[in-house]
Image 1 (cartoon, rainbow, N blue to C red):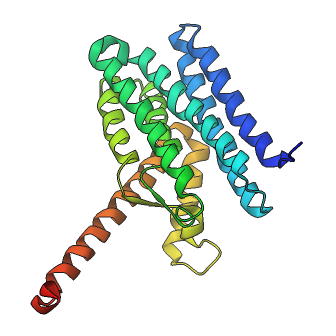
Image 2 (spheres, rainbow, N blue to C red; image 1 turned 60 degrees about the vertical axis):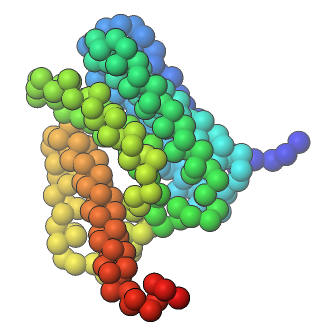
Length: 245
């Protein structure tokens, strides 16, 4: 019998458990439990992050672990996240809501499939396309944020999911923690920003979590535009002789 790495896969199993438990809360059809379900899906992201870090730390990556991790992500951040969004707002839009749900789940599957075939060659210091846990995190943290402050923003969720679905299958690069080089010297403002973010997370978790996901989303969009402008500038500076060569 083929041996597998136990510790990272246990955390992946924790991801699956959080997804299943969140689903059980959603299926009770009690809107009061939806926020708790969203928090459990965010907890699934913690398990997803830790299993990846453990696999890299102990060099315990394997094809089995990659596939199990993708299946867990598809369940928690694709299917269950979409079911929560459907119960909260999408079902009110009928056919349009079903279309948004289908689009989000399919693009999550495409994002994960692309990750699986690129994991050995790319995506070691950058993610190509918005990672599915982050896309789910934006939706969930936005929902928690508006529920916490009792804001009438649920109508925006379908359009937010369409944008996030598109970002998952684009070639915009998003940084990993490895590419942030936190162990190396960085500007003093980096430390101030991190401390402020931790204070907000502790003092007002709904605000801190939503802000963290939006900052990460903005970092990728800024980086993508910067690369596009750099490539356009390089093409503009290319000499006519090079173009005809």
